[in-house]
Amino acid sequence: MSFNIPRGTQDILPGTVEKWQYIEQVTKDLCEQYQYKEIRTPMFEHTELFERGVGDTTDVVQKEMYSFQDRGKRSLTLRPEGTAGVVRSFVQHKMFGNANQPVKLFYQGPMFRYERPQAGRYRQFVQFGIEAIGSDDPSIDAEVISLAMELYKRLGLKEIKLVLNSLGDTASRVAHKEALIAHFEPRIDEFCSDCQTRLTKNPLRILDCKKDRDHELISTAPSLKDYLNEESSTYFNKLQHYLTVMGIDFELDPNLVRGLDYYNHTAFEIMSSAEGFGAITTLCGGGRYNGLTEELGGPNAPGIGFALSIERLLAALEAENIELPVEDSLVCYMVAMGDEAKDKIVELTFKARQQGLKVEMDFQNRKMKAQLKSADRLKAKYVAILGDNELADGNIMVKEMESGSQEMVSLDQFIEHLKQS
Image: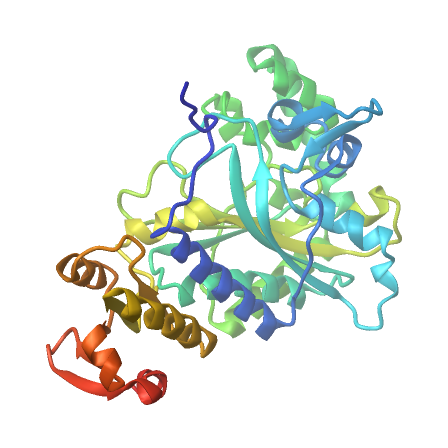
């Protein structure tokens, strides 16, 4: 009997995993510069956290969560996104009392959503995200957006664009909600059952419906920008000013609606415009979520963040034919010819690794020709060949693979010789 992985998952194999490791290191280095600290939350949480934090009218909660009961009959859910868990941790551990505010955090790890798998979209996927909690200054919004843009820049992406919208404060949202209800209610029976449910709970989500996106009422719906009060407009204008000061280009899209209920004020997406990238162009999405900490039992602590899929990032890199500078070569491949020589090669290999050198040796007792082919496949800079005769003389033959030049090196000086090469 043979087994395959579940649909919507993937094995990340050697040769590819190095790209992931490179991206992970770039994100960590960038967050360190911006003073965001890593947080690691559980991969499953109480289901109610996502129902309250993400919103029970969202597709994520209604259709995509992996939920189960544990032996204590408690409902638990594999995390479908990162923000709710981070904010829960912020509240639980009273980070709002930290001396340094806002609290700036980043996370990286697997998320789980039951949705139709397609190119760059999986049921288990990896997100990198940041959260800045404790400030309602639009300059922190600009910082969060700039970090995302800088990450893509450092990885070499050029065919990207930033799209912005304002969802307004609570008062603006209430006024817009009433206008949307009045707009959709007379013909709501023409929409899907999900939209009919959303009408009174969160009609803004109708604008983001995948099934009814082409309905004529979507394109003629009242625009949120027409309902922004003075405070919301001032906030959004300041954000645009800060981005302009930073030299970050952006486009305004009054129809941009993020897929989670907790967003307000700033909403943004970063999209790929690379040819052949695919129909789903969004690489990164985020926004402000004032009120979420209070919803989860904490004090008033305004927040903003974003999340991006590593899988989609890799797809965008491929679409732009960008090769990451992944180093996968060896310093030296160790070749033993003879039993006594192999004893010494085992010892030298171990000692070289203790000195931080990337070395490899043969474990199949193959002939020299086969071992040299392995050295070539592994892109070894040098091959060290030790036979019983060389061992008796206290020497080892070191060959540079690119030039073919070779020299005899004392066994006592061999490791130091590799370190200086």
